[in-house]
Every structure is written in C-alpha cells, then in structure tokens.
Length: 55
Image 1 (tube, rainbow, N blue to C red):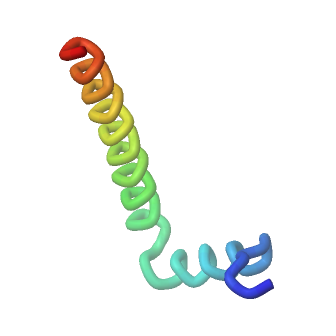
Image 2 (image 1 turned 45 degrees about the horizontal axis):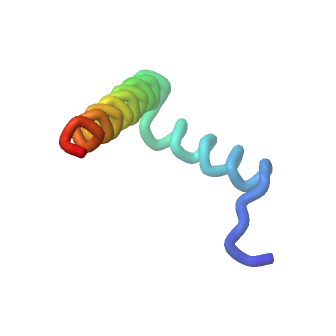
C-alpha cells in the first residue's frame, strides 16, 4: 500500500526533524502550528455564525 505512513516512518521523520532543527526550534514550530490551527478553527466557526445570521 504505497502512500501510507506507519508508526516507524513517522518516528523516523520526527527523528530527522529533531536532528535538523534541534529541540528548541521544534518546540517553537509545534507551538506555532497549534496556534495556527486554533486560529483557523476560530475563523471557520465565526464564518459559519456569520452565514447563519444572513439566512
């Protein structure tokens, strides 16, 4: 099944990212990604509420 990532592949990718970026950069990257997802969900929720008010 090509194209599917299993646990060993994900662990290998994370290990390589840790070696390239280092622990502090990786933590900052994770924090930024989490904030981005949070903001995206908030914007989608606000958009849905705005659409419901117009109807």
